[in-house]
Length: 334
Ligand SMILES: [Mg+2]
Image 1: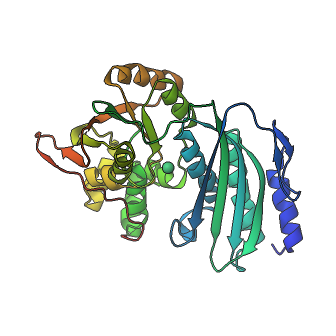
Image 2: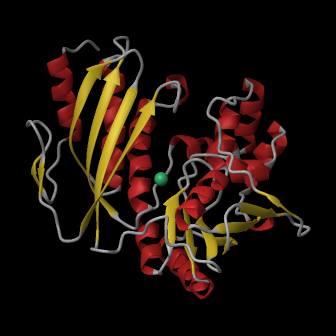
């Protein structure tokens, strides 16, 4: 499909345009105009660069577009806020055809609809590789944003969902064709590849955890060890993680066995989980767990507790303690 720049912009506009509450002027003018509601405005932005954050051959344009929105929405969710508006800018090499671009915007649109988010603008440019820059604006009741700074000594450390699936998916996608096809026919590979390509931001879970009184919260993008160390540093505390309590799915264990990886390494150092990591008073863990299960069918697992001082300690199944190195997943490690 060959389209001029203006034709492409018109085609994109047709894919993304919608009437949304609060949007006074949407896509197409010099700037968007939106009507704020009461409360605080929460802003975030994230950059996805081909060759750094994704490989064009390993993800469909539709999934890529949706993922660009989801990873930003995840940061809004981590503040206990709700997403409202998005701006999406795209730079493209000249060899990319219009159909690919329209599919990408289809994915952006799908994700915006899923999170009740309005795409109100963006920009398009040439570059030597694909680059997607998304900015999301969210809202939270005044004074209710949950930061990384509030963890207190004695708090429980909790995570939503399970850990290591996207990292296992990434390792699997780099495996040889026979290994990958055997894994796909065995049935457990699909959920891992989906975890990598189609992350889901925990928006309702984030606002619910905020209501449940979490003292600090963040989303897991760079691996549990690295992200927990950031939360601890911001709060001026340390943490102990019980490795036997980490939520790890059977699929991650299957992948680890086949690929000769340690499932605990996938769970502690694997990136792109987009689960929520929070700290909360021990007495509040059970009520919060019950609410997440009831409302979303999502698990909340206590994986450790907050200690005095700095640093992370891992306790293995035999009760032996060792330092938990804040080592995140390396996109280039292969
Ligand atoms: Mg984050």
